[in-house]
Every structure is written in structure tokens, then in C-alpha cells.
View 1 (cartoon, rainbow, N blue to C red):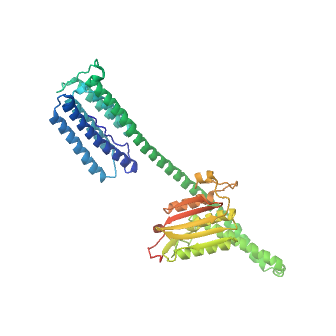
View 2: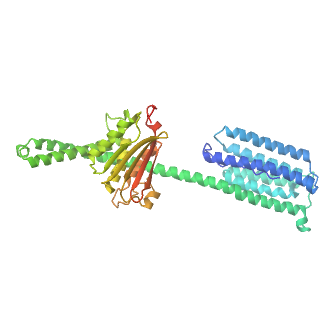
View 3: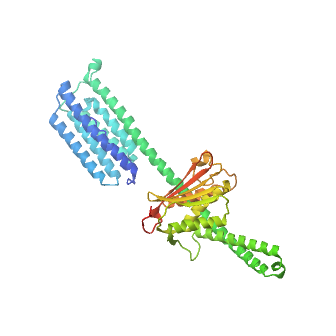
Length: 437
């Protein structure tokens, strides 16, 4: 006679947790309907206890109709309200009470199924709603004990296991224990998954807050460095025209080298301000994917002379995209890391497959330590042993995530590592074009 349906505890129930719980509960209600039908037939025709089949089957049909309607309703609704959960549980309690009243009332051993209802309500509902379920079940048990019922079952256990009441009691215990283990175990896993997702979201929020604070610090430092760099640039420009320096080949070469390094520092400061959103007159540019990648590789090769740098663009078609410095910096951070550990062998490979831009940067260095791989993308997650290490991959991973992609790392055999950045083309493309493959 068991009705085992409950509903998930959720206040913002448009999430996947509520839907998964609802699927479990609708399935359990169908199991309850089947169990009730089998129990009624066995008790009436097998054991020989006369039951009012008409009213009991009517309650069973009503419960099945309610569950079918609920299944259709929730299939089209993404939100589960607390009121709906409470109403559903009260319907379950009412149907169980009706079946128990028609089959012995308080003398029916399946009366202990009310405990299951209270346990499920306590786990899946808010405290205020679970107290309502507890009060409703208590009132129903009290009513079953006071009202006369059509059928009376002898509660004596003097004949041992041959007694029908004791047999029903054992079956009820096994049913409650099994449903608690199976159902609450499933719900507990669902809730653990939800908590894990919430923890991941909190971690992501903390990382994004960390990025904001880093951006503020970097932009402040960049502003402070702007003035002395401009001053150095002017002084070096004046020195180039001084007769003593202009006529000395060695000195003029050193001044030119210093000017180049100052200009590089100014370029770095400009990129920092651009990433922080504080540059003027610069915005994401419309270009093509092939041109963006080719220019990105050429610029990095110019600024970082590496003897073993190899660039491969595997796709032959092209498409228009919107590119900004964040996308460029994402790739440059990974290339800079590869240069530190493997200056003699760096492979930069780009391809388009399955609607995604896939960029691989591979090196022949020592690879990543297991501890770094376990916490990939966390700030300061590095084995380089210097302050600020690990921020490159952290920033690149967050740029990829902000574009709907992901960054992954694998170690190569016999040595080295590959960092893969996979971005959906829809996040950067202006329009889809045939890639010519």
C-alpha cells in the first residue's frame, strides 16, 4: 500500500538538481502504484482478507492519474516551487491514508509507511514545509486510530511468522528500509553534485575577483610606469643627437638598443592597460582567423627569438572574426611558458574542427608535475619556485572560459607537454563561412 513519492527541496528550482530529483520521484510514484495494486490483489485473493476493492482501486486510479498529470506538467516546466512540492507530498499522504483506512486503519502494518513520508519530507523540503508534513501524518495516524474502518486485522503475533500481521510488518520494514537506502542514496548523490557545482561556481567567482584585483593593480602600476618610460624615451632621443654619442659607433648602438627596450616596455604597458580596459582609441578589431593567427605568431616570434619555434596553421579556408588583445594574450601566455622550459623546441599549431578553434602549444620541457595538473588553472599553481609563478596559465584558462571554451594540459612521452586551448568559433566569428577543407 506504499506511496513513496516526495519532491526535491529547491527554492530556485530551475536548476538541473530539481529536475533530476523530480524524475526520480515520478519514477518512485509509478513503483508505488504498481506495489499497491499487487498488494491489494494478493491480500484479497491470495490471503483471503476481504477488502473493498472498488474504493481502493478508485484511490489507486486517482493516484496514477495525478502522477501522469504531474509527469506531463513538469516536462514543460523548468521551475519547481516550494508550494508545488508541499502539495505533492500532501497528496501522497492523503492517498496513503485513504488506502490504510479502507484496509484496516491503525491495525494495518503498512501504517509505518508514514515514517517514510516524514523522512523524505525532512530531507527534500524546507523545515517549515517538513513540519507541515509531520503534522499531517500525525493527524492521519490519529484519525486512523479513532475512526472505525471497514476491515479489522488481528494484531496478535502469538502464531509467529504464520501471522498475517507480522508478515505485513516485516514486509513494511523491508520496504521502508530498501526505499530509504535506494531513494535517499540517489537524492544524496544529486545534492552532492549540486554542492560540488556550487563550490565550483564559488571558486570561479573567487578567481574572477582575483583577476579584477590583479587588473586594478596592473593598471595602477602601468600608469605609474608610463611617465618614467616616456621620460627615458625622450632622454634617449636627445642622446642620439649628441655629438659625442652620435660619432661613437659603440655608444650609438647601445643607445639604439636601449631605445628598443624602452619601446618594448611601453608596448607591454599598453597591453596591460588594454587588458584592463583602460586604453583609448583601441577596440576589438574585425579581421580574419588566418590573418589573426599568422600575425600573432609573427609578432611573438619577433619579440621572443626562439631557435626552435614552429608555427602550423592546418586549416585552409578562412572566416571573419572579432579579435582583441585578451585572445592574443591568452596564446602568448602559453607560448611564454613554453619558451621558459623549452627554448629550443616550441610547436604552435592551430586548426578548426567540430565548430571549434583548437590551438595546441607543445614543448620538449620536463612537463607538468602531477600537483599542477590536479589544480590546473588555479592562481600561483606553479613549480617554477618564484613569486607570481603560475599566473600565465591562470589568466589563459579564464580567458578561454569567458569565451565558452576550455584549456587543458597533457604531458608527452618521453618528455614535454602540450597545452590545448579550444574555443567555440561562434564566440569569435562574425559569420560562418566554408573553411575549404
